Length: 423
Ligand code: GCU
Image (cartoon, rainbow, N blue to C red):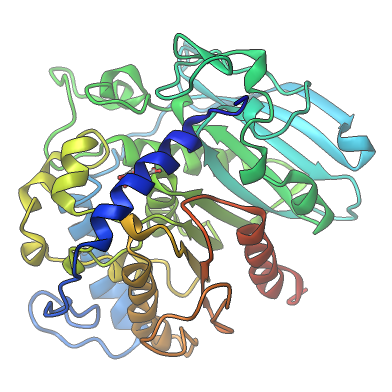
């Protein structure tokens, strides 16, 4: 098998975990924290109070207890264009690689790969997302620079000794249907998540986090970020670049992520309101799923297998979901009034499709404060029946844990409603 990439390994883990999830019953006795009641009991009934009191409170609760705080300190940001090909993909697109430096000494950086449709008469809307397997894996285009970074998962021949080989080119193309995105009039920006922080336990100092340490600090404090916070920060830095690029319409940027990178996209979108649409693909526990359902993956399982993703404080809630002062419908509510799309897959029980739907559904109470429509009801739809003609979209794709052209088709249609019909 030529294409033994990270995604195959993740799918395998999911299949195993799904069997476990299927034998499990969701807890249905839980009581969700009310997004519209502050911790001191004040009822929120309009968007002014939401923005003034409850939104900042919920954001702080996530920072303190879940993903951890993102440092306020600014890094020394600058950009260099490292390659341009105005004639990529048979002349339909411009391929551009931008190196974003985070420090003056240029030791820390990430590479953003863009494909921009050549058929354009003004700045174009775009999708921005982190990828798992390196920029060169998203398309067979040999002009994409081969990542020299460390890879947590890739197997030979595409990855050797944790490094990408030429054989990794295009191995993740199914998740990134570039031609489909370009034909729909959108640009795509993507970054290998390992540019920001290796995805392995005890690796926080191998990423960009130390740039933000105080003099004596050797690791983030218990209420400070883990890898998901670092990856989300990277998406915001890509946005800093996008705002400077005249080919791109920064105000029409949809941030997207699959799985752990879906958890990341939600957190990026919750913190950084410049992201105009937020898309969570199969993000599961710590992403879209209601944690109090205790179905599929739980906080304890996730924190044990991936102790580096969230803040150390989040570990205090292992087996104690009901003590968490937030649940994940409130993470989605933080995105209001911006459009949000949550997608699940029928065989991805590990990510709890019903819990993902319910989160998106319950976030609707906050969208309603803006007079915006959420999802139609508390019952999840059938497979391949996208729902939500308001500001919240959802579908349950038939199949397993993956980002597929079917998912993209729905995201493009959703984005069209907000980015194309309001010109
Ligand atoms: C594991 C993990 C999930 C995560 C997924 C992924 O299955 O348990 O929380 O979403 O990996 O990132 O693919």
